[in-house]
Length: 470
Ligand SMILES: NC(=O)c1ccc[n+]([C@@H]2O[C@H](COP(=O)([O-])OP(=O)(O)OC[C@H]3O[C@@H](n4cnc5c(N)ncnc54)[C@H](O)[C@@H]3O)[C@@H](O)[C@H]2O)c1
Image (cartoon, rainbow, N blue to C red; front, side):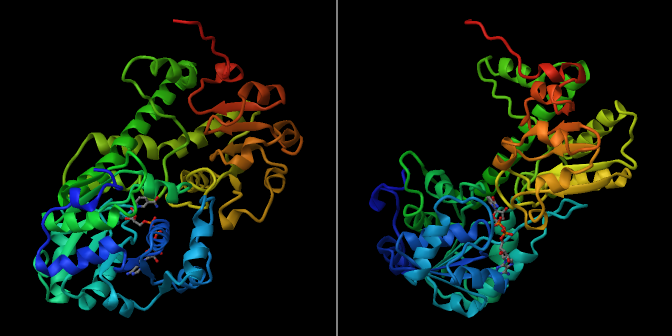
């Protein structure tokens, strides 16, 4: 089903209660709310406003609300098109933000995009924000409206948490008086807007009618040719979303385990990966210094919450072990100079979880800094995006250190002059966690190089690799 198809071809019969809602969604005259104005809610609100709807954004954080009403994106990072779109829809008064949930009373469709983390120790879902949002929505819900949960949920949450909370606080019955849908987001920071229009979406209704009516909204969002809107039940949508991220985590864990194999054997995982991927059906992902962000480290836990699983926790352990492995690589490089981590000064480059974003949630770099400090190192850190680390320059941070650990392949780090940096450090040990530095070049500049996936003896040859026609 293509988002641009005629609505008559994508929807079924709508009952009398929801006919006005369906008509307003079709005509873009519906009043919409987006609850939660973070990395997801902000571009969603802007996209809907840009599509012609009138949108109110609701958040509990006044600073975010103020930023949006001032026409500014409430978070840092390169997001092509988002600053311009946000400024435009706010100026046109199509989007207004507020901390006052009373605004929800006027809305025909309420989308929820609050954070749904897991507990750091138990790995069980923490639904504080979700429950807060539901408590704000329920008493203000009108018959004939629709609620869409875009946040990522553990399987069964719509049934066990969301629907009962809304029915209890509204006095309305889901399916009869109000429609309820789970339409999980698939966006990635760095391409939020483009993802919203171009990625296929699962529209999981708690009733078939709920999915049908939600399609009338989402066909104005998912507009790129080839992108599909796939109606399903809510449980399927919950499992698809958490499952796709668990799949990625397991795949990355495989790549990381291959990196550890290659290091131990003295081989080059990048050459190995290239050649593995020439075998049909093999798509080995990139190994690296760890997995972070809001989604991949926690969605696998959401998927298996309340049950016993073996593969997914093992993958989590491999990926969560990579920052400590980076500390081991630093220790190994220092040992070549007769140094130990204890008492050494280490510069960490990159504190976000992904290149060119300020998003540092679950960042492997945070785990690395803790691991290094725990082993007695004196750690400094730089990041061109993350506010707490961007005031100082790379030169300031590397001055007089014993090792530099590159954790994020920010564009700003791609052009670093490693010969010049070698002149600023006390000991030239470089640990590359992202295959971002030409190891041969660095070795020629005097660096002792350690890199994820490359056995020490092979480091200077990391970029060789002869290719002959098959
Ligand atoms: N960040 C991503 O790349 C991404 C991608 C796909 C899916 N998701 C999912 O989308 C959801 C939101 O993620 P995010 O990255 O936007 O989170 P976020 O932390 O950036 O934003 C959540 C927002 O919700 C607000 N909030 C919390 N409680 C609230 C309440 N009771 N009422 C109103 N606002 C409230 C917070 O203040 C915050 O601004 C999560 O479930 C996440 O797993 C995120």
